[in-house]
Structure formats: C-alpha cells, structure tokens
Image (cartoon, rainbow, N blue to C red; front, side, top):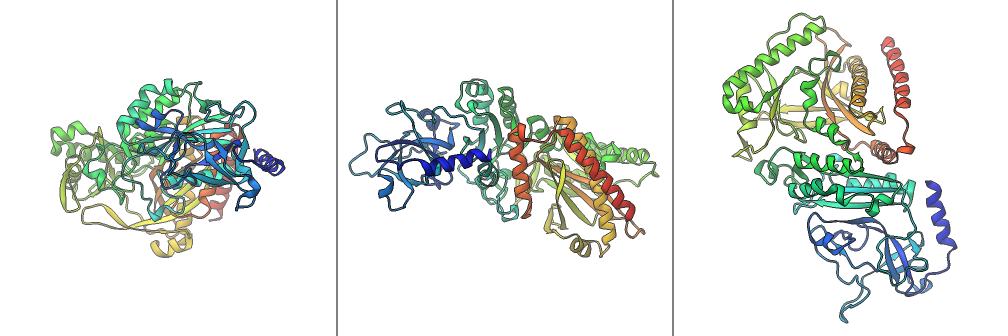
Length: 569
C-alpha cells in the first residue's frame, strides 16, 4: 500500500508539464477544497444533491481542466485547474456556482484551485468530451460510505474530546483520514458521504439499500468497501426539548435509534459491512445498555446488581413498579453474593436509574431513601423532568428503565483496548452529585500515582491491585465480545469503579461501570488517537488485520504477565 503512494509521487515527478485546456483528474477532499466551509459533494446525478438524503463523493478523484500551462503558474510546480464536473451540492442542497466549463456568464469568473502534481492524473485517451465523474480504469483500495449529520444545528465538539473531535464531528472523520488512511493509501481511496437530517432519511436508506448500493454502484468497485456511522442513536423523539437541551449544539447528530439500526442492517444485508462503530447488533447491545442486566448474574463480569423495569409497569402503577424493582434488585444482589460464596448482603437503599441510548452521563439519576427515592427517579426519567428550570415531558420510547445498585467507590478507571490490547489508562471521578441527582464536577488524571494521591488517600498499592483486577475482568469481556461478533473490535473502552477494601490496606474491589463503543471519548490522550485510527484502518482492510487467534495468544501472554505481577504485589 505504501508503495502505491510512493509510485504515484514518483510518476508525478517524471511526467511532462500539464498544459492549458488539458483534461485531467484531481484528488478532491471536501473538507479541504472548494470552499471547505461549504463542503461540496460531487453527486453522480443532480437529483442526489437536490433531494434528501443527499449523497455524493466527498473524497476521491474528480475531473478537471487545466486553466494555464504548468510552468506559467505563480505557484511554481503546482497546477491550476477548474473542476469539470457540474453537479456539486452542499448538505443543504445549494449548488456550487462557476463550476461548469460551459455556459459561464460573462460577469462570472470560473472557480479555480491549485493542486500539486501528486494530486493530479491525466485523464488518458478517449476520455475527452465524455461526461464521466470517476477516474477510468482505476480501482481504489478502499471505499467508505460515511453517514454524517446533515441537520441545521452544526456539531460542536467539546474540548474534552481532544484534538480529534467528537465521534460524530467532521473533525473526527478528517483526523482518521489524515492520520491513518492517507499515510498508508495515498490517494488510493474514496469517501462517499450520505447526509442524514432525521429518521425519514434513514428510513429511505433502510427501504432501498439493496437497490442503491448493489454491485452496480461505483463504490463497489473498490477492493474493500465499508460503512461508517457518525451519528448518535437516541430513544427520544427527534427535535424534542430534552434533545435540544443536550450540549452546546442542541442535540446535533442525535437520530432515532430504531431507524438508524434498521438502516445499518439494510446496508449490511446489501453486502457493505459496518466498520464504525460496530456491527449493528453489537452496537445496539452496547448503546441500549441491555448488557448490564443481561450479565448481572454472572459473577466474574463484576456488573453491579442491575434490573430492567418494564415501561408498562411504570405507566400502570409507578409505586408498584418501584417496589417490584427494588425487590428484584435485592434479589439479584443476594444471588451474586451466593454465587461468590459471600454472606447475605444488606438491603439496597441507594442506587441509580438510567435510560438506554443516553450519552455523556446524561439521563442518569441517583436515588436514595429506598423505594421513595426510586419512585421519584423513575417518574423523572419516564414522565416529567426539570431542565433549565422548566419542567418538560420525556418523549422517549425506551421499553425498559435500568435500575442499578449504587457502588461506593474512590474513582473510575477507563481502560482503552485497541485490537484486544490495553493501550491507555485514564483515572476519572465525578466529584459531586448535583441538586438534580445527576453527577457533575468531572475530573481526570493520566497518572496512576496522582490518582492514588488525589482520590485514594495515597494508597498506591490498592490502586495497583484494582487495576490488575480490572485487566483480568477486561479479558473476560473480550471473550464475551468475540461471542457477539466473531472478531475482536478495533477499539472498545471499559470503565470500572475502583474502591479500597475496608480495613485492608493495599487491597481493592472493582465493578464494571460501562462498555463504551468505538468512538469513545479519548479525553485528550496524546498517543491513543493514532493507535485507534490505525486499528480502524486495519478493520476496513481485512487482509491486513491480525486474526482473532493471534490476538488471543497475545492476551494469554498478558494474562501470564499480569498474574506474575500480582504475585509480586
């Protein structure tokens, strides 16, 4: 793959200068060319840019015409061109002006841009005069179908996500291309962007994916083809107040979860695998948080006692629902203790209630005072809640609400696993519970000694013991994940509660808090983005990925080393 990019650069240096009116192809990148703030798609047909969902080539080779001899240009060796394809549209359906080579008004100047020779290729004989968008006799190594947010409220990536942006932002996709795809493939790839504004766009794709993206579509000529979904599934009605009050961008990229997963499944049935974040079934399992109550009675996964409270019980009689939920939660806690050979536990009086398909620690309510507090939390999450000092309804279609025992802990440990190997550790803590019973005042540290000093009274040995246990549980989860998708994902993040055992210095307990899908916040970690993006690239190119058995052998070695380390401790 690297040799293709090198050969292309060498060929560019050896070719004769480009001449005025010569037909060529240039490598176009929507976020870097032709007024990048407008982001023009090159559409195969004008109707693909006029009607929703809008769809076109955002990165790849496009036809152009040289407007002046190469050596005459003020930019030295670069080539000045005018795009030769007439159908450029924005996500809003605006048509790019001054792009057509014919019928330009006398008072308008054609749009021109400068390209380096390595980003130019001659069209070849027989192309002249033939309207063709794609470079003839060329097969890209990789073609990506990117489902991106096309709503009027543009995405604002919080600084906490780091320099790569949030996983739904243009910055994230561009970072992936810049850091992993282009260095390995040069200009031997394509990105086709499909803009999604709401569930109606997703429904259209779900109903027609087998017609649109069959073997006849140009993207299928690539050696490897995949789809990536830069959207957040939500159970709330699109455009509702709770969504609008989410983040500075008013819930940008939040789309109806059922419509999104139906579209993903349709694309997968059409033969286009999902490579970001995960295959549809596994992604739904993680985003819905169903795994928490599915695995709550399996001791070695260390999931806190968790139950799903059917929505029908809450709607019928919320008092009875709270009583049933608390009784079931106590039962699960007793089951866990019995399976571990521990004495019967105390009754639960404090816990958390949460919604499926929630993001950024939202829709999580702490409750106290047993059944009374739980009833109030269920009411707020299922019926009405105060947002920005106003009460609003909760228009979501969650079939269950999740209720969990609250685990007293010292900190949270986030383990970033890339291709089955732990590659990063971040220590975090929500330092207070706000007046509305939500968690706030988030702090983080990349240093284990600092985390032990700040939040564990300096008991570094206890934190080391907790981290060892978390790594052991992580290996169990990776085996479980392989059972779900028959492969090791390029990346996944495991969050754990870590606390000190009472009256046992140097010893810790751990509980699984969250399993975060690929696209997790890397919290500004400097080395992680490159590792994650490289793993994502390998997953897009299956013949360059390590077999799952090799990953398993690596983890066996890690387990042995971890065991030896624990004996030393």
